[in-house]
Amino acid sequence: MALRSLATRKSLTQRLNSTRLAQSRALQTFSLPDLPYDYGALEPAISGEIMQLHHQKHHQTYITNYNKALEQLHEAMQKGDSSTVVKLQSAIKFNGGGHINHSIFWKNLTPIREGGGEPPKGSLGWAIDTNFGSLESLIQKINVEGAALQGSGWVWLGVDKELKKLVIETTANQDPLVTKGPNIVPLLGIDVWEHAYYLQYKNVRADYLKNVWKVINWKYASEVYEKECP
Image (cartoon, rainbow, N blue to C red; front, top):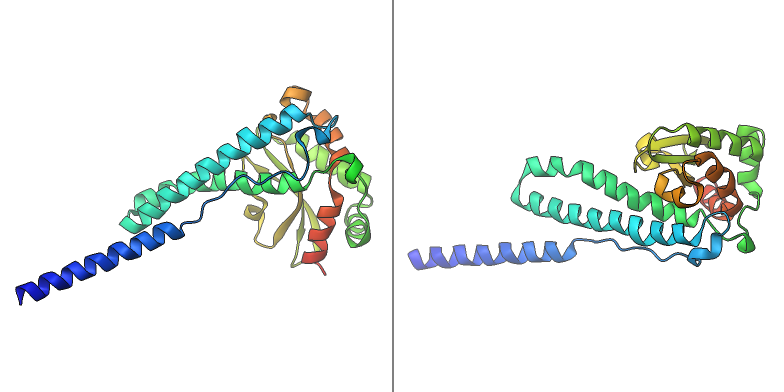
């Protein structure tokens, strides 16, 4: 009887360890996405030096810390360590948000020779005119919001897919746009952290905001809009 009980406990322990190993192997990690253009392709609007540092150093750091926090969360949940699970939420939001936001940002930019800065056409162009009067008016509003944002953060053009309405929002630090509402989908986001522009524009954020529109990828924004508001 004792031998049978020992064998049963051993079998249960082996199965538990096997389950934990499988769960550990299934833990998803994130990696730095490639840019669809060279670092210097957005000059003179954004220098190649800024793009390389921004992508290889800043974005990579968010990913590294995001993966680390997710691994710690995984371990804490396996242990039933509720206190650690709660403590990790801020790191996951900050670094996960940094990864999400930058992944969108790279797609929002494209070289002038590949259509950067060309005004949106089709349904998004019509929606901009309807909601803001004109593209120029929209750009002015976004620039004002972005310049006025205290500290670090992002300024966004999004679409409320439930109301079928365009919205301008700002988020602090690395908060993704979804924190403003589950129905708001980002069409384009502009990074107004100093690391996005300081080497080139120093502390004059307004000049950066003025020039970044020369390399905005409206084609990508239009594709997202048409997908969310067919």
